[in-house]
Length: 155
Image (cartoon, rainbow, N blue to C red):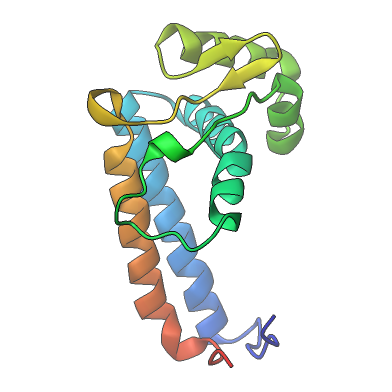
């Protein structure tokens, strides 16, 4: 891991924080507009998407070099997330999270399993998150370009 060489009180540190916060606001706005959700539902949906895909994506990446060529969602397996995990992560009441999960399932954005909720892998005509993935990749590229002058060089 690279040594932290940026003074947290400096203008570059403030600029880096500013860039990340801007991307977070933009991503939240896109998700809210795309799915017609309020911010609370967007956060809960984001938690389910992240937690349910985390293990499958990490397992896929650990199997070897992955490229964008020929690597589709059919290689992934999403896992169920329990309301308690979201309640603890976001600091919301468990009942609020539970009600919102039921609402998101009724809208077809989540699927329910016995042990929790999961976000279905998005593929083909049923892919409702392509625009969000396009934004995230673009944000990563923008951040890389904007942050490169302020981050230590990789060894």
